[in-house]
Amino acid sequence: MTKIKKIKIRLNGKIKTVKENCRLDVLLNDLKVPLKKVAIELNLEILDKKKINKIKLKNKDEIEIVHFIGGG
Image 1: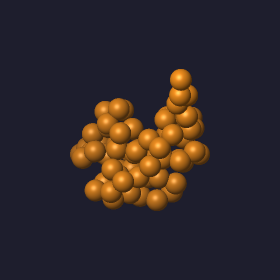
Image 2: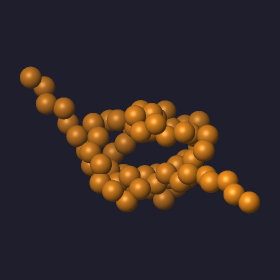
Image 3: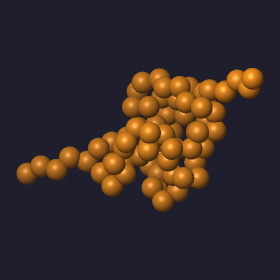
């Protein structure tokens, strides 16, 4: 039986465990993040949303997801 390797990331300040080699787009989809209404930062760098399907998460990556809120 093969053991699934896991890594720890920090998501909006909280530790989260995910599968090793998990892609960022898969994580965001699992979390039901509305991509059109958020900005995503990985390790202090704002990401181009067109490229998130190519990013594999690594141990100790830090992700911040900021939701846009309208107001007046």
